[in-house]
Amino acid sequence: MTEPPPPTTPTEPPPLPSTPSTTVIHPRREPFEHGLLPIPKLIFSDPTQTLISFKHKLLQSSSNNRVDSVTVSDSLQISVEHAKLVLDTIASILPYESESDTVDVHDLVLFLYIQSYKRLLPRTHKDSAAVADVWPSTSAFDGYLSALSPLQLVRSNSKRFTPSQADEEAHQLSYLQKHLANIVSLLAEPVEGESEESLVLNCHESAIYILAPLRYATIYGCSDATIFIGAVGKAVRVEHCERVHVIVAAKRICIANCRECVFFLGVNQQPLIVGDNHKLQVAPFNTFYSQLEEHMNEVGVLPTVNRWDEPIALGIVDPHDSLSHPAGVSDVQTESATRVDPDQFTNFVIPKWLGGESTGSTKDNPFILPEAYMASQQRNEKNLGEIRQLLREAPLEESRKRELSSALHVYFKDWLYASGNIRQLYYLQGD
Image 1 (cartoon, helix red, strand yellow):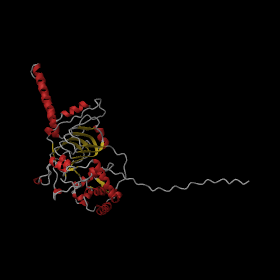
Image 2 (spheres, one colour; image 1 turned 120 degrees about the vertical axis):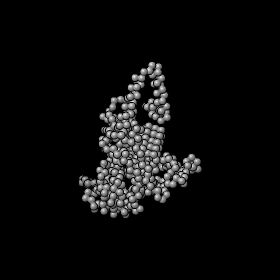
Image 3 (cartoon, one colour; image 1 turned 90 degrees about the vertical axis):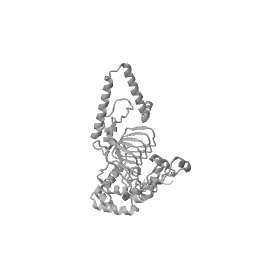
Image 4 (cartoon, one colour; image 1 turned 45 degrees about the vertical axis):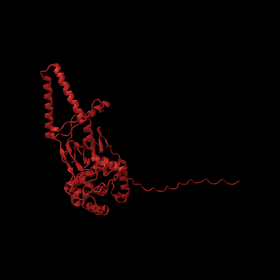
């Protein structure tokens, strides 16, 4: 008989191969949609080499890696006003809250790098001959100004289709992949837990209400619509819209290539107007809903600061698009916005969709109206009260009063149809 084999001694399992740590980059579209400025001195022909020395110079002059608008102005040879605009823009596209009176050098360098980005070139229309019959071409007498409206420009742009949002986002990702080796060291750490974003695209003859706190909002390609957006803590962009009323409480707003639009604004920073705009108007914020102040506080919009009447108008040509432009056009400033006449200013009433009790504490417009607009509003309310009293006290027989009431209803109904406000009654009935 053979002896049994000795018991085996358990051995420790071999160590697992070490896994290298992985860096995850979270691409964001906000810098491309809200962070491009048509200021030529921000765009470098060789951004990599130029910005390396630029970054080292700024880091050496700063003790905490942050610089102010004066330093940015001197370094980039731009005006202090444009330097402040750069800082405000960077603050609006960062994934975290940041003070806008100074900027982190790495954030500034990354912002300057992406100014070389060019938007996707519009695709050629399948039937350009048919489009030529529908959309007129620009006359030589128009010079650099387009004879088409912004919506026509979007639809026809040299007989081309404007890329969709998905196309543009794919183009942005392609840009990041191509330039990743150059910019990866400048990217900030990823931030989780970003709040909501709202996109309002290609809405026509509509009334849209978004009663929610947001970080970003984009309104694109809309016409003949009324759009209300609640508190927006970072930035709003309105582009290629026509005959649209926009009512928004936000930290900042950028308006590009719009025509005959009216903006009722409660904004903490100066409105930015870029591109080919015509007949824009601005007015102070003119409405409220029960949770508005809570939503503003949640995203950091201050009711004590409203710079609605201080728009900054930059170049008429956006150097970030892929279209060619005549020489000298980039130096032309875009048309700015005019103020709505106080006598034409009215409050906007948001429907109580649920018809229940209010759940918030806001009972009035959180932004203080300028004196001229407040006086006009008080005059209108006084005149309305006097007319009501005259009608009540008019020495008329009941039959005559009924005729007068019927005539007023007819005139009001005619006004509803003529102004297009009858649509809003239909929407309310549908709800």
